[in-house]
Image 1 (cartoon, rainbow, N blue to C red):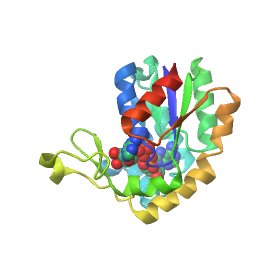
Image 2: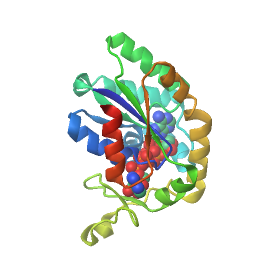
Image 3: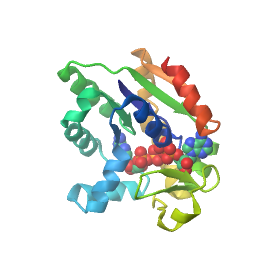
Length: 208
Ligand code: ADP
Ligand code: ADP
């Protein structure tokens, strides 16, 4: 299974992708997670990416495409993949199409998780993640267990200002890839409003 998750920041892509990869036993490839790991490791690429991420802007295409190319060279992607947060621009979608063509494989589905902007800010501001397990929580919608509360991380780009820039980047740079996948007949729209279980059910319905 080769699938892509598209949707605005905070739509629930990470939450749903984590559930789906268990179902399909494919690697979950999140460019956001990969950039955060590079920032933490202090690599030159991480330092460059950090400047954009903090401001809620997209990391330049050549950096992002290079990162994904390297990840695709690893053997576990032969079995398929779940791309979460990539592609986010038309040049990224074109680079992915080119790479898949070279490998002689096709995408199976592109899931578009739709959540209106007015719900996004609340989801982003309350987001917390567990650095030990990678689990994603929300202070109100998916409260973490009390015993791990101290170790939870609040991302520095999960502020109201940065989320507004990220939403703007989504509408301007990422939304244009929707008609690209629609014209290829790969796009499935999924309502991302509702409880996480309701959204998982809607995804499974779309994948039937
Ligand atoms: P979100 O919660 O917005 O879905 P992600 O964890 O996917 O966040 O991404 C966090 C940040 O990492 C983005 O705001 C952007 O700066 C950078 N990033 C992640 N994926 C990409 C990409 N495909 N192209 C450019 N920048 C990216
Ligand atoms: P994305 O990867 O698209 O940026 P996340 O999966 O990280 O989104 O979810 C963003 C925040 O919203 C997290 O705090 C998460 O717990 C919460 N969340 C995810 N799905 C839902 C949902 N269906 N309803 C309410 N909150 C949700």
